[in-house]
Each structure stands twice: as C-alpha cells, then as structure tokens.
Image (cartoon, rainbow, N blue to C red; front, side, top):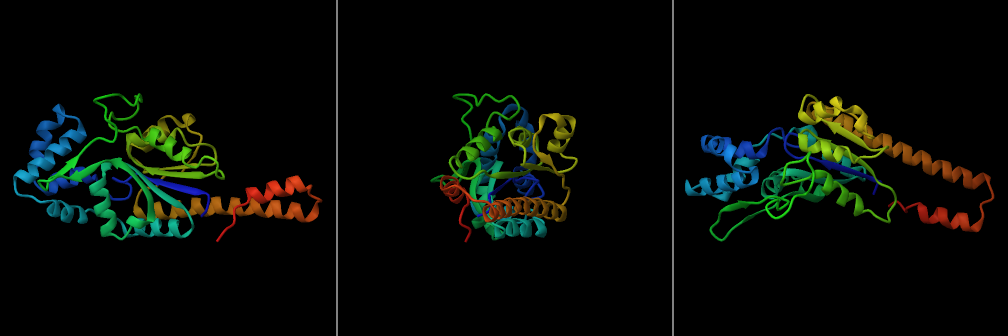
Length: 274
C-alpha cells in the first residue's frame, strides 16, 4: 500500500447530485419535504420522508431503484479504481446515509474499493421501512464544532482516521469535497496533504475566502474528467516524492559507512512493498 489515504465526500463529489434531494424529488414528496424543512433537523426530516414514502406504498426496493438512477460520471468510477490500483486507501466521509451510499456504490461495482464509510446510520426496520438517524446524537450532547451541522463534524471523523494510523509510517491525505461541511476537515490537513474542492461550490468559496487558514495544497476540479486527472496527478506526485526519498536513502547507504544502530533504524522505517 502507498502511504496515501484518499477521503471522498459523496453527494456532488462521487455522485453528481444530492442523494437525499434526488430520492425526495424522484419519488414525489418534494412538497411535504419543503413544508417541513423549516421545522425539523435534516436527518429527522429524511427519516420522516421515508415513513411518508412507506405510507404511499413505496418499498425499500423502490428507493434502491431510484438511487441507481443517480448520475455518476464514468471517469469518477475510473478515478476510484485507478487510485485503488496505485495502492491508495480510500474512505468516505459523508453527510448522506449508509443505505443510499452502499446502494449506489454496489450498483456501480465500487463498494469493495473503500475500506470505510463514515456517514449517518440507516437500517430497515421490522415493518420494511428505511430508518435514518444522525451520525452524532446531538439531542444528548453537542460535538462542539460551530462550523459543522449538529449531526456530523467531519473534522472529528477525520481526526479519528488520522489516529487510526498511529504508530505507522506517516500518511499523506487527499480530501475531495464540495460542501460547507467539508471546510472543517480541510483545516485539519497538514503540509504535504491536498484538498480538492469542487469549483464554484461552497467548499471552494470558503477556501478562497480564507486561503491563509489552510496548510494543505489546494487543487480545484469541476467535472468528472478533471476530478480524475487532478486526483491521479496528485497521487503520482506523492508517489514520485516517496520514491525519490527512498532512492536518496538507498544511495546514501551505498556511499557511506552506516553505523549498525542507524542501519537497523533504516530497515525498520522502510516498509516492504508487495
């Protein structure tokens, strides 16, 4: 595995729409959704919409078939596959929900490329109704971040992902997103990491309004084809830097007498590549 972790948002980043709005509009409950939106938290409202669909005879299978029609650019599919083939670890951090994401990824043959999906939980209850809940139970306590919606702070998720690699060789992160909720984790990226905001979307606006707040390199994208080209360019840049660093260490070892303690340290620091 390369020392690269690629983190994708889902809505308007992997797919070209918002999956919640897509289902609501396609299955004909937009009017009720718009009526209730000012009165309910988003996740609670989506849970209510699933109950409404069930009351109209819509099944989970109907919802799944609707999700399979959501637009996903073919070059985003190839971007995911190529990033995986280059040894990157792929994860999702999204404010959608697990059923929607899993359904779409499995439909396009992409589910197994991701090692982890972080999103709002969902399940099918005993009555066959899809239930949707917030990632963070904000009714009992707040996640404490004033940049993020109450149900999910993506930087808290990102910090947990960073912590999961404790004790391993340093990881380089590439974060792709579009929305306001993607700004907070972008601030947690370090030097040597990259953020890929979708141009003319809220994340892009926030970054270019506050450029000095970020340590990571910023590389924008607009459509599926340039998402793929920018992502693969960054991955290859990091791989070239890693290979150059390994070559430098190897060259130094060939021309110098290395004390045994230093030599052992080098062996421990260089991973075996399969």
